[in-house]
Image (cartoon, rainbow, N blue to C red; front, side, top):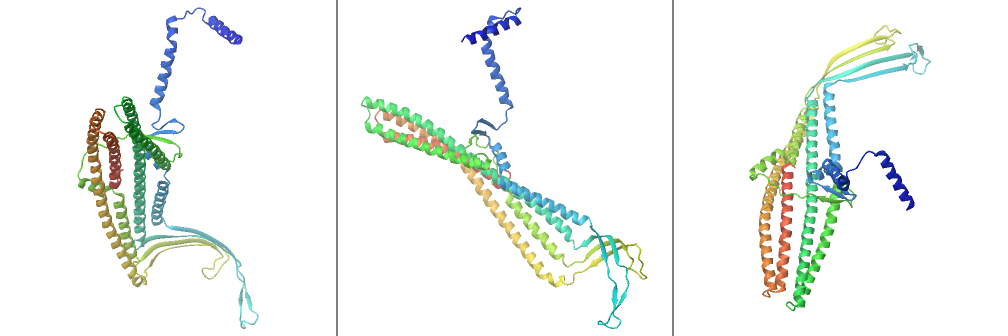
Length: 474
């Protein structure tokens, strides 16, 4: 304590020596703690304004909006990453097909050889031959190329097929992204529904506890029976057990969402409240038109039909001439290309046009063409079937979304009626004109109506995103 007083006296003396001519304002000193608090509050407020949308309140809680959940799900989805690699591969194959057509095949080669003398068997194979001297060391350096001029249009068709495959891969990638988004939205909304249920049951338990206190006071006064108190306590116990179930549902839904978001299993996610989508009402024909423009399934089937048509043209191109230009240039030693030979270096260049026609393809190609035609017809039928399925899916999603919106309106009316009914029954019960069973039934109906309203709002959101996913614009 003496050391503390000594330090304080030193600080006081130091302040006096530095501010000997300064007389502090007593009123300002009295307001300094308040000014410091306001300053700290202002600093934290500014930090909150520039903080990112995804924030961690503590080490285990994540506040997340649905668009942010989509972004995290896309970032951590292995299916999306695999499909992106597939799309990149298809793009490289498309580029390679174009290079193969536009640029000639060029190769260089070189040889260094040793040759033996040439034995000449003048008196037969079993007699000693005469050795004919040759130049023993041979060198050859050269380059050659071949440029396709016409190959039955096969290379151009290959380029078109690879381009279509790349476009197909892009559509499949977008479909996977849309599916992941819808799955994320479903899990997100499921967690939000559980949290809404928890809020409702907690509020209802608080109301029931207040009502139980009132009934107990009536029992003390001899107005109600002991059995009424017991019935209310039993009903309250069931509500508390329902709260435990809802807590477990929250943990399960939270883990499912964390898995798709790439977060630890125990991370607590708090979704932001989503209002029911308010969009301009359109007829079924409008949504169907949008689906035929954007539906992933429809466009995948369309691209597969295009590939079958291209394959048929490639098979038909087998019975066509192949024309190309070729050339060769080389240095060699010795000169044994023309007689008389000599041991000196020489060079030679050759260029020409080469044309071939596969005659055997005329009869070999018949069944291949028939098979390609049947494949195209099969894909066309599959495309029509996909169109039928898209129409059915859009119709179902559209009707279910409208049904969910109507359910919200019905549930809102039900809640109002249940609240009024509960109020009336409560008054009549405490006026001893209705039974405890009537009171408990009215309370249960009110809680059930509130649950159904919360479920209807979540279901409407789910059906909205399902409709967007089916159309292909999620």
